[in-house]
Length: 332
Image 1 (spheres, rainbow, N blue to C red):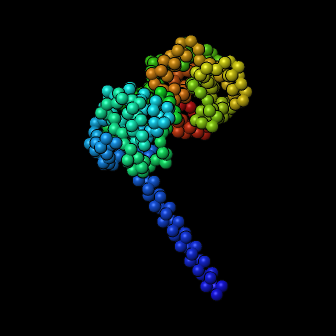
Image 2 (cartoon, rainbow, N blue to C red):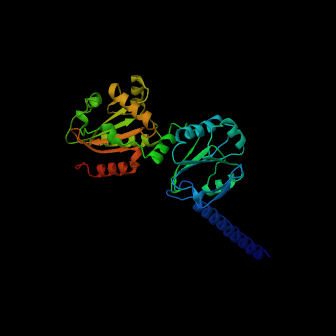
Image 3 (tube, one colour):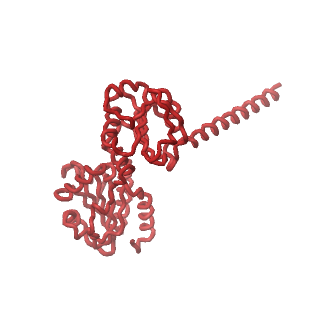
């Protein structure tokens, strides 16, 4: 009897494991089929009906960007995020698809909405599953004019911070190019606006220069990783380094930063023409896009490589630093 019971227990455990695997695989397949965050994932042919009864076939929305927003009209930030995007881009080839459980409130609040806006109150869960979202409201997606996934964000973040920039890139093909900042000049030491920081960085032809332009700093973010790598190279004696901060800090803040982060190389604040130009770029583009720029130059200041957020190339930067550490006798 105990032996039979033991067999039943084993069989039951096997059954549980099999059922768990089936459920796991089912969830994995659902996840694989969802579109959220998949590069170039394309919206399937979806037929929806908005709250006024108008039938919409996503496949027929061609040659226009799709702005898909799961919006809760009770929240000011959610409404303001949408209306800012709408007012700026309503005259462009774009379609706004809003999913809300209270469409009347949105229409009442914004009677200016034109026929480029469709509001859905019955297909919310259907669309959420298609996109693979685990959130209820307060998030939105961008799809390009071929219905391919482009960008997603939550609306807790102000529209101007990142979404506006992504829409400019997608709709008007406007985006920050680091060449705009450096112009035709290819030598850091010959740029008047960098004179203050470059005078603090010793000239040494046997070493290369790493110069960081930062709007803000987060120790656990990309900036923190970059700083640790730069400190390591500086400590190995193969690089001279410096950092410029563009956010509103005081000289004492800079000194505190150097002390807390144990930074031995020059750190200073941007001033004058350099700061004015940087602010102009932030107004035109996005503070996130300009948050971090890393320049690698020869010992006499000749620019060799530039890494920044818009190029999505920080992984190449880390790989490059690793190569530099293993081949210290060689630089770019």
